[in-house]
Length: 516
Ligand code: HEM
Image (cartoon, rainbow, N blue to C red; front, side, top):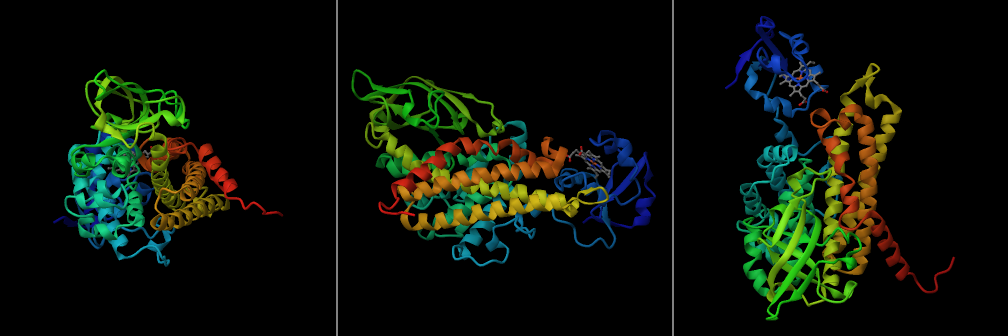
């Protein structure tokens, strides 16, 4: 139990040789720490013997106090309950307006039931408590997520749940979210909740390396893979023991998938394909045991592409690609050199891969949109908090009308994208995620969301000023968001392709005789 101290006792420790300060009701001995304080020793010592709370919170995130808890001497008499740690705050539903979807802040919603709320709680606890320390460390230091964490995550059913509803959910080792929802009740809103919550630490590279990549690779096997793949390969992936990624893009072919060049040709026995070529920007590729790979098995163009499950081997080499992400994402350049792949590893029909790729895109793009909205929500909450607490020209930033207008743009962007997303998610529950109708709506959602992210990032950085462009510290969340927000506008189908797809589908469905 922490010692109870009075302000009189604190005041006795007011020299550089013996300096105590009060922050948030807790008393810290900063005598030794002053020498290494990143903000300067002299400045810190000016507060010796005093309460530094107000100035402290203008300059530091709450997590600094968690990191330096070892400096604590005790708690000030009458200061009330011990404040929550930063990870406890992150794990708790926020009361800051617009920091949570409206149904979590008192609005009614037809989409969410008790099981969705229960699942949110479990998944949020996992990402904000169990995973947070590793997430921050891996993100900042470009480290791979550990297998232990992946397996803990899988034991909560998270690897299974990010693939959407289906039979595979029954493979989750301990049920879904510790029993928060039954496999047969699981719908796309449950997956949406998981996807929203896995974005909460704002460590995008880490998040995609941990479970983002598997959620775009595995659905192909689940929907189109042979029965033996579902029996032998899927279960260890759902348990987090192994992982799988999607390998489509090449230096030669990004959005223009039909132009890809990596080849698979039969060997003399006719029993194996021999794969040669390269893949680029493969999220999670550095950690993958399996690559769901698009290959040219036939003529030029879309009609000559097949999908194949390729195991990691010496003939499959991976090299990290440095991007705006932290390298925790494991984004890889892949080289296949005479990789021998038995023909039973073909997914679907030979030369039938293009259709598989296109239909898989729907779930991937929807997932990207959900995550983009969740990240924008985090950046908006941070910006709102900063505007409330940051004082300039003698008053809080939020007192400036120009700042309030920026916040209004952010709130409106967030809420309109969320409503569109929920409407589409509802329809995915009814018509599934595969049809062209839902596909074009998902494309529009992704387009609208990545544009909204552009606005949110721009406004957030302007409000945060220098801290919005400095790594770590106060602006960590906003700087990270603004550094990576362009990535989803490029991957999973570029913004322009999304817009075009939505409009072309609308033209296709245009009534023949409609006139002004
Ligand atoms: C328990 C007491 C304190 C601890 C553990 C602490 C720790 C830190 C740390 C880790 C940083 C690096 C930036 C970051 O991670 O946020 C920092 C920066 C800084 N600190 Fe402290 N600090 C303490 C108290 C204070 C006090 C009382 C002041 C004076 C108002 C102060 C002023 C600053 C300044 C000016 C910076 C640089 C901020 C910037 O670059 O924006 N610190 N401090």
